[in-house]
Structure formats: C-alpha cells, structure tokens
Amino acid sequence: MSETPSRYRALLESGQWFSHLPPALRTALLEQARPLHLEPGQRLFRRGDPPCGLYAVLEGMMRVGAVGRDGKEALLTLVEPPYWFGEISLFDGQPRTHDAYAEGTTRLLQVPQAALLALLAGEPGYWRDFALLMSQKLRLAFIALEEMSLLPAAPRLARRLLLMAEGYGETGPRRVLHLAQEQLALMLGLSRQTTNQILKALESAAVLRLTYGEIEILDLDALRRAAEDA
Image 1 (tube, rainbow, N blue to C red):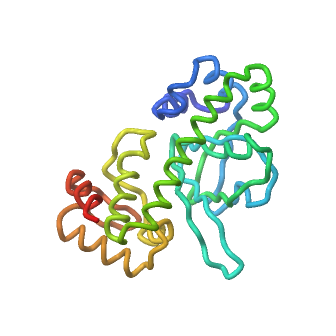
Image 2 (spheres, rainbow, N blue to C red):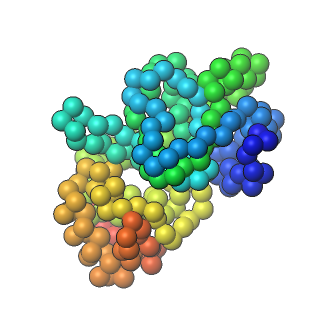
Image 3 (cartoon, rainbow, N blue to C red):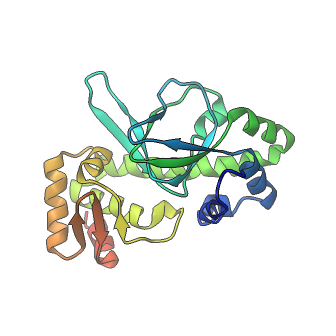
C-alpha cells in the first residue's frame, strides 16, 4: 500500500460498502492491494478471462459491458470512484462475465484473487461482507431490468439519472454527472436521437444542463418527479 497515496484511503472510506467493513478487513484489503494505472481505452479484462481479483476505482472511470459479434455494444455501467467491482468471479471462480475498459486515464487498486481467497479461508465470516457488495449490484440490476420492461423511455432515463445523481446509494448526492449522451443511450438501450430529445426536454424545463460529456442536475426534486411520471 506504500505506493498508494494516503488520500486514497479517505476516498475509499467515503463509499458505503468499504466504510461499513470491519476495520480489520479494511486494513487487510489495503495491505494486499496493488495500484494499477490504465490509459484511455486500455482493457482491464475481457469476458471469458479467468478471475483476477477485486478492484476499486480511485481516479477516472471504467466502462463495463460487452460487444456482440455484430459490433453492437451493451454498456452496463460506468464505474467511478470509490466503487469496488469484480466480485462475481470471487464467488464462483468462473470466468469474467463482461469486458472492462478504462474510459479515460484511470487509477485502480487490485486485490488479487489468491490473496482474497486466502483472507476468506482465514476469516470465513468475511464472505458476508463481499456478498453485500454483490447483492447491492444485483438489486440495482433487477430494478434496471424491470424498468426496461415496464417504463416508457422518458421516466426510465430520468430514473437512471436520479440513481447516478444519488450515487447508486453508495456515495452522497452529486450535481454533475460525467456522462456523454451516447453512453446514457447505450446503458438504457435507447437510440441516440431518443435520448437527446428527452434530455433536451428536461433541459428546457430547467431540470438539467447539458455540456460536453457532462450532465449537470439543476433541480433534483424536478428530476424525481420526472422519474415518477410513468
């Protein structure tokens, strides 16, 4: 951990999952972690790769999704600080389920798979803490699937923006989302044109402001109302 500036511990402890871990587990993870630096577009792992541990985003952003044989991309999520990811393969030992690429210059912490398994063999009670990390994401995935099946495009988009603005329940609220319209469209399975039309309508209503690669939330209460307008 000596190569990683001490400020990163405070960053990680700003996240709900890490901050609620037993102190001994937090220390153990940081002691086993090693820093990684990725250039824009650099691949961390690909679908089908063997398990390689758990990761935390310190700076930048990771793009998690998959590309079909026809070249069409499914973007599941953009992982930002201080989120941890990669826990699925810890539980089942199976290959990676998706691709993970650096969206821009990105710094990560990696806790290798072997170190995690050794830690859990010594302290089996820690499995519950990692299960909570996975269950949080599983809950969000079920919500996203339900919304995709039941909601019209406009409230579905508003709900995704609201989730991001509220930090997916992991961090505190924020006003500026580092998110391009194309990325939002991919995450929601909408066309770029439809996404742009909905965002422009929200901008006209003074709910948000669009800038290059960013969406600034101006009125969180109005966004909540738009999310409920099904």
